[in-house]
Image (cartoon, rainbow, N blue to C red; front, top):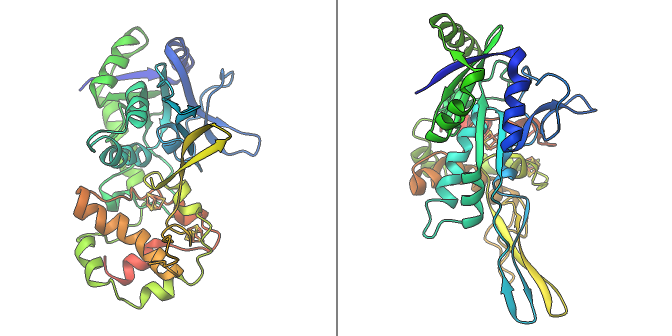
Length: 336
Ligand code: SF4
Ligand code: SF4
């Protein structure tokens, strides 16, 4: 594993080199003061201190609305797949790890999803270790951590004067070697400083007990806690849309005369119509069943069927729910 460092003052040069290869998205502060992954010729120095983005990078790989094919006078045409490179710089480790969950769904199937596969292939993810976890974060309880590089091609750790860069994949190795002239070797002091900073961030994260969640949720399927916990859910879908691992979608054909297109659009299990059958029957008729499904999917069904949790503990669903729903409450109640 290649390990290098680059002074903060040279980051603009690094981003410039990446821009010569393709589209670069990096953290930038918007007018409201929020930091988001933004594509722009950045005049200001790259933002390095920020809480996680409100939107996860999921949409770079699974767009919220995506044309799968167009048709005209009885003939279907598949859209050409993108071939330019994209670099996502500053993705937080939880969101990078979420890509491994999406890979299970969209790459491990037979056949793999060609749209998702191409975007994964052409996108390089440079994660930036967290230094400022929020009270809603619990990545350390679901197999991740503020310095975890899983899912990223390169993991960067912010130091006092440098960024430590660790290649995590062959794509990350290639990237570091392509900008080798901008990089210095990592020193022992730099590695120790990185460990110290990551350790300090880890110590700020409160644990949530999720060990053996599949079995505990199996046992708790009929628990009265689902009714109680779901009472305030508005069915707005914010939790699913912001979640970096939620991936349910609907496919619709949009027609105008003999022309049209087939579109894949994000969908959400909190919506009453999500499981409504053509017969009128709905197996998840109330928020209780819908909320239970969301938790069961992430902490039980995904473990049973895909061998991994489908929650990376990013806390977005907790921070952004307008009804203050908190999946940790249910997990604690069920001892999951
Ligand atoms: S964000 Fe909150 S209110 Fe909206 S669907 Fe999710 S749990 Fe329900
Ligand atoms: S379920 Fe909530 S905490 Fe878990 S990955 Fe999704 S948004 Fe983040």
